[in-house]
Length: 140
Image: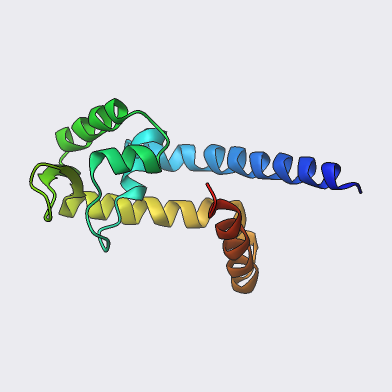
């Protein structure tokens, strides 16, 4: 197979996996009363990491900061997250999960793990794929 064919096939496979993930997660998201964008934001809010600014969250999710503001408001209305001043710079706003938000995040991660097309891979294959995808995304 020529290099261009390999690259095209690989891109097709990545897009097919993304479609599988989206389709398989839909029922779980409905059960949690989340949309895809709110689920992505909750997923990004790692309680073990330093709080991210709203602007940084927009960059991580490849969207406009106004979208993060809207999603943040939706999560706040549900009691899943709170906007707070950044611990290092009070002028910057962050978004952090509440206790209820952390529970919903855990449920989300469980749903994703069970329904993921990667669940068919063994632990070593998952680590290898994670490493390769990390390498591919490191320049993004």
